[in-house]
Length: 474
Image (cartoon, rainbow, N blue to C red; front, side, top):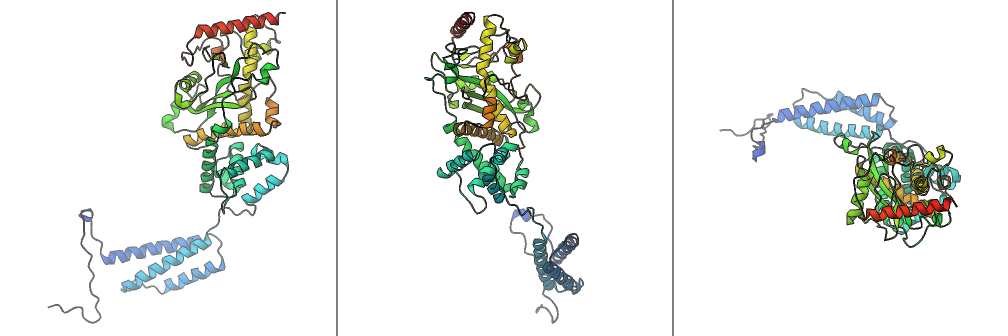
């Protein structure tokens, strides 16, 4: 009969049997194998800690800990059968090695010039330096900070002030910086930058309903009323419609849908602008392969898009990529249209249709200049970084909201002064060339939208053309 272990012997330990079916069929690990595995892991960790300390400079305290490791290891005998001592040694050494790694870690952001100090320098420094970094003057920036603070959209934290949060976002869209570049410039982690960029973009999208509002259909724009070339012929015009392509980064499985006719992936953004170069309606996020007329067709027929339809007797100016329908005045096809065509001939007009197209293009040029200001102010719209598709769509809308905000509070903005002159040609990367083929009659629009009385729209266009040409020859 077994009366227990003899003197000097250890009681054998057993492994509890499996309690459920998940452990059924698996090999049982003995106690001796577990001890051996723990010792092996410990030795590997010790070797990595030694190589880590030898490859970098450490403080004196870390060197003392390393000496303690060496001293403990010198007293370790692998042939010792005291299992409890081995387990204790492994646990103690693992704790010591972790402490060494924490103390010898090199911080990522070591610059003495913090993001908060950079923000203070820009706010209190030269006005031109601030304008170069965030594309708005000091007064506009303070108004934007007040807007977000009063409405409790952003709150100051122990990491970032509201001013620094907004300035970080503005510099990103004003220079097309990536998350990693923004993290380096403002000395914050990538997670912090991404979180605040996402928060600010979401709030700016919510503010779109406040700053991107439909035009007043009862008023006649001063741009039309004070110019004899446009009044009274276009007195019923309430704005211009066009689309622009903003480059986007997409996955390979959807790249074909987002590849436009110029060969690069983009999102098609349709906008309505007034003649003061403010956005009054915006639809973003459509695939680059979609035709402009299809985007307008869906937006006007789907009530969820809340398109501001022009009332009877009013209309929007569209280019020859769209059909001439009730509420949308398009130029004559197969007739020179673009401003450069008339300038190439020294301004000579050959017939009433050319005169109509020339003045139509001159008035509709406001939307091309508006896109020019937008992309010149926010280069991220020309070189989009690798964000999610939802974030890329939100950034396009945010830039349009900021565009209207600056136009509202700073009419002397340099970019608006530069592009605000009638007849200014759009920048080279604009989409003014997209409808060159359609202006020659080779790409007629198959989509219908809005009103159905095309004959009435053609009659109105002919009436404007004849009236304009008669006054032109007087």
